Structure formats: C-alpha cells, structure tokens
Image (tube, rainbow, N blue to C red; front, side, top):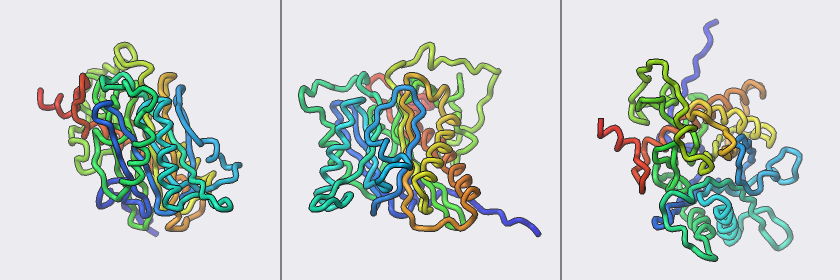
Length: 339
C-alpha cells in the first residue's frame, strides 16, 4: 500500500500566531535601542523550556520542570537589557493579573510568566536610565499590545539585537500540515555566531527557506573556507538568542520539554557557532491544547519537534533578513544593495 505523504507549508501569516490561541505583543524604547516581546496565549498553555547557552538570563524556568506543580503558563516574555530586562516579566505579570488571568489562589490570581533576556547593552543606545530601567513598563505594554499579527526585524526583543557583526532582530514563521498540526516560532536573534556562510550572502538556514521568505539567495558558492570570524572578530559576551515555539497539539509538560530540546537544533542549523559560553540560548515551548495527538505519542512528538526545529532555523534567518541598520550595525539587506 502506498504511504500517504503529509504536506507541510507555512500558515497564512507565516507567523507563530498561525498556531490557534497564540498572540504576540511588542514594545520598544527607540532611544535605548531595546525592547520586549510577549507571547500571550488566549488561555493558559502547557509550557516547557530548554537552556543550552553558557550564559543564560532567565526567570521562572524552574516552574516548567515536569516535576513541579504548575503545569500551565499565562505568557512568556523575551527581553533585551540583560539582567535589567528580567523586570519586563514583572510588568507583564501585573498587566495579566489586572485582567484576572493567572493561577487562582484564594482571592488572588497569580500569573505564571517565564522569561529570558538577551544582552544588548552596548549597542549604542542611551542606557542612562538611572534607577528606573524601562523594562517593567515595556513588559506591560507588550502584553497589552498582544494580537495575532506583528512585524519582524527591529521589533520587540529584537529591536537592539545583533547577529554576529550584522543587525539582529525578531523573526517568526509557521508550518502547518494538511492533517492539522500547527507549529510556529518567534525568535529574538542576538548570537555570538554568524547566520551567514563565510564570504557569502547565503544564510546557514538556506535549505529550509519557504517561498523566498529570507531573500531567496539560496546555496552558497564556497571554496571550502568555513572560518570562525564570529569568534576571532566578533562581539563576545554581548549575546544570546531566545525564543518560543508553539503548537496546537496537546502536550504534557515533559512532552513540551522534549519539543524545546529538539527545537534547539534549529539554532544549530542557522547560527555558527552556537550554544557558546557567551550565549544564553533558550527556547520555550507552548501547547495551546487545541488538537489531541492523533498518532502514537513517541512518533507524533518526534514529528512536532522536527517541524519546530525547522521553524526555529527559518525564524532566525527571517529576523536578520528583515532587520534594518541601527547605529553601527548594518542590516542584511543594506549589504545586498551594495553588491
């Protein structure tokens, strides 16, 4: 009997919000060259996380361990600002609590808002904020602005990001199968490593591109040089790539964690080097539980994780492709115009 081939293609918006029940809000400070992204499900979602970088900055990741009590989260916050950016989750928490969302405890609603931050403090923006960094207010704004469509590039947590020696940014994409699986990713791209093949305009993620979504440059023409200029000439200790993958498929906490682990492969397919001592590379998983697992659990889980990894690679490239030059950091498309 001939085996049925299941087609996978981008969703209508080609954003993480193609996953039923997911919204995204962004806010930024154009003077400080920094910003915040909030991923807000319609209803509390099952969450998981995987941290691979050597210098992570996170909040409430322990609550996502499968052996911990709380099994759903109300939002995930991605922020610039290094340790100062962890305050963004406080603003998001306050905004969610004000609307009655959170883990019900007697007369209180306690929102569960895991968060991760990237380092963008040396990007040329005005960081003279004294005793009141902007992140709490940016986190509140991002939650309040959450909707099902948003821009890419110099947006939210990617506003002041850098990718190697290029302008980084916020990227997103989706993949939908004809049997109803939805997977999407949103990534704030700020790595030590490069997203481009050496001496080339080709993205490392070029094999995964869909419909020319990051310029259609395609495969690199190479003479075998795959040097590590990002390490010898790069911005060490000013880094980290963080993001969220989401699916409509019902997952447990341990299954969500496994998807996050597999999704990290998307970083390895799109950034070189990755997971360095200077990065805090982190991926969260959200399950909106709109559709049950229809096939045996290990097989279905492997399939979702594989699609998630491809989405992460595409989202990384889309972040850089859509980013505009900022300060001394050139945007990818500005380099293309010079050739």
